[in-house]
Image 1: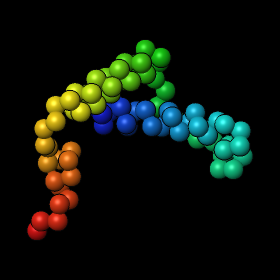
Image 2: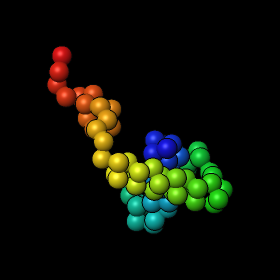
Image 3: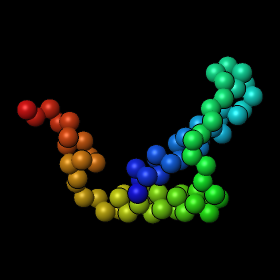
Image 4: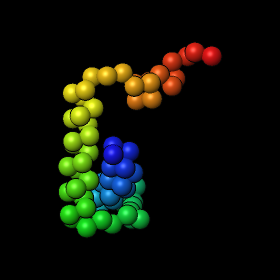
Length: 74
């Protein structure tokens, strides 16, 4: 759920940030290829909040999420 929120939300956020006039003048604007309706964006935020809260409260080790993939073992 968090990866989906990241993939769908970041381009939309970057588009909004590059619409700010000083930033648009300095680096230009970005047009997001993803345009979700408001209900989908709200659902995305609620789902990401629920998933991150569950992850934080569970306090269990996961090799993929907690850096075990790059721990230096050969």
